[in-house]
Length: 195
Image (tube, rainbow, N blue to C red; front, side, top):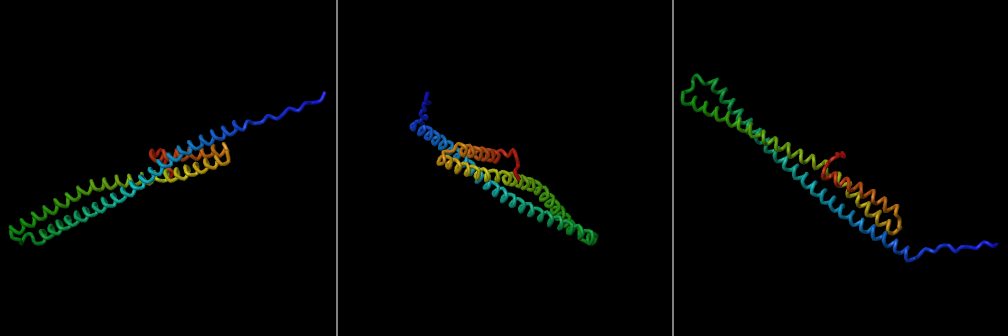
């Protein structure tokens, strides 16, 4: 008996077209999600950099204010000591009224020196807090930068996956997007310091 050849199954062109259309639609929607996460990462990066620069500027201002207080404290303390030396040297021969004026002036200078010394403590704490905010921003910013790069790569790879109709490329874009999303989240939460 002769062998009968069976016809090869013909893929339904309509089914194949619909499958390609579904794949394209899915990739397009997922790519839109990538773009939203990319926008969030870009916004987070810009805000972080702006806050970092502002904190640095404010810290510099506070340190300048601190330095001014130190200088004023030093000037008053030096003047109080000069008067003390003056009283030691000339005190016995000074008239009582002049001596009283010198002693009052010495007391005022010492009080001013103490006041400036006390004021600079709070200023130093403020400056250190601002430096901490700056350092935190500097630690957060690279996360956003790397997240943006990975999400942009994810968008490009997803677009190429549509042209090549490649699920493997689409899977690769998902990996890039997941890494970018994790970095974006770390930029806000700073659970891990990168550098």
